[in-house]
Length: 237
Image (cartoon, one colour):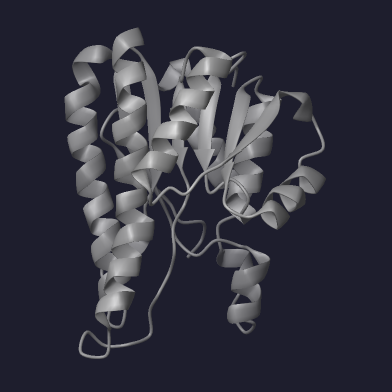
């Protein structure tokens, strides 16, 4: 895929999936703006992204704070003049308890990390995309947002809301050549997930590199007619 000189903002860029997406975008020729919250996370990303890193920049951003997001968008436009792609990878997981046991704080945290963060990033990036009449937006859903299970009410509800939000985003952006799609993985093969579920069959889990390639495709010119789609990437699980 060729994303030569496309400007891509990646939230959640320092995690396992974010690192894979960052590297795949750089390899495709994009100029990547990585959003981060901790210096240690940024340093870790820099040590892992070893190819084409001259096109990688980073902005410390609180994606739950509108002023911080607004400042980030302003900086990107000052430095690059355009925003071609937004990939929302920030998110959090909470589960294993019933609805009765779920606290208001835990509920709010899931809605914030998985839904509000995407809303704020999209709302502030959209004016630039609307002005240039083009853009690609990817949100990261979850299988639990399609098929909710016991013990994950807050997480599942936030991811289901994300799907609906992205569908509305796709409808609103259609006339201006702005596409929005959701990628929904099953369990991702990461070191954290392996530690949490050591007895699982890791071979059935989806590789982060495969998810990254799916996101890359959706941001390409070839995928221009794909809009409002919910795309499962489940591996063998």
